[in-house]
Image 1 (cartoon, rainbow, N blue to C red):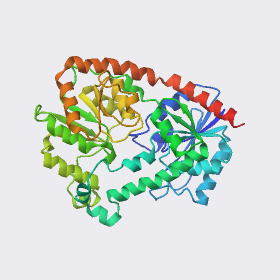
Image 2 (cartoon, rainbow, N blue to C red; image 1 turned 90 degrees about the horizontal axis):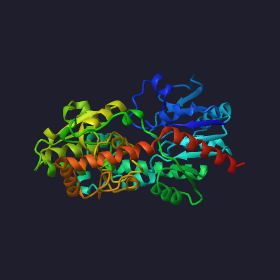
Image 3 (cartoon, one colour; image 1 turned 90 degrees about the vertical axis):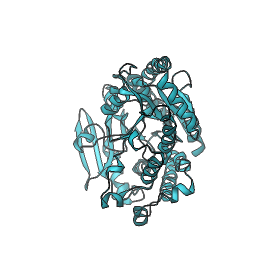
Image 4 (cartoon, helix red, strand yellow; image 1 turned 180 degrees about the vertical axis):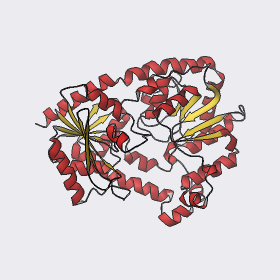
Length: 423
């Protein structure tokens, strides 16, 4: 069976040749390595990269194709040239089925348009329609207007404009799902939203994998740094760092030494050059003002970009892990922390309640209820038995869920079922 993957970025050999330090989509490579063990599968991988001309390489029997990404924020999926480029890759690989990893990037739509009647399936990673609707993460008009930057004036990318950007991506997401008609999901929440986006959508369940390094780490109460919190990367308002900061200010009343480690973001307070200020995003400015307003500057460590090994090590050393998002599909970072055994707290959104049972393997709270989040953090700081209970319950559950050998077999079964249905 010839299988063509369309990924959002170069992975595996492509990741190494282009020297990409991946901070998202890290579940793709473990799946690829497992797929290589199945002799019935001939795998090709195609994506876009910051290159000027198409490129190709082969490693361990896998063919890798790379097309120029282009300079626009959204890939030009209407371009005849891009359409023809994808058509050539599809002709070269002669796939029995095409799998698109996510709906977030428009080159996947271009590939689907070029695929014609070839069967396809989309692995749902996040649902952009829900991101667009919830993008501002509960920020008020006053907070948004107070975060206006010089960059907003030059690039016209206010938080409202950023939300519009995601609304545009949600339109091609809807077309992608309609063109394929097949999606791989991990929870009932995603199933319901995909069926809302396209009424005839067929859904198939298969969990995504996580990097093995998380399964190899083990959190222990005696070894973790007490009164510390680690969170998912903030990025944009939807990830809810602002509400976690408000909770942290409440926690600090009982634990003045509390420390929050924030991945994926350099320390904005150390970036004070004229150039830095010109580039500063609205949400970053808002966070800086909030941190200073709450007097939290000494309680926060900005970690910058971390690879999987660094993330796993930080999780192992941290007292509590928090996902404060206002919407999530499944939160890979949450599953990674649970695999390490770090006691977890997450907002009751999206597919998260299908993984976390509050009081059993973690805590759940409503996104806007940051006082409750603070209370959950305090409980886990003070209760060794409860923290260890969450750790013991979470680690084996996630280890079973993300068994890469089982998910690869399941994925192949899905491919065969789709191909058979469309013959």
